[in-house]
Image (cartoon, rainbow, N blue to C red):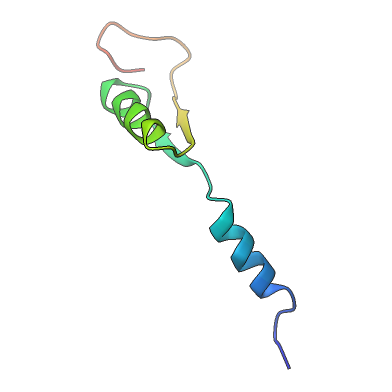
Length: 59
């Protein structure tokens, strides 16, 4: 008897549909990482706390 029906289906689905990589911060390092990861074929999601860019290269 299985404890969780459909577990194999969910596991297979998770492997076949990788989640996007989340990057916290849209500064120079965050955007550079996002570009490198996207070029490797993975989806990325960049999150930034600031509502506007700053001159320091962060936010």
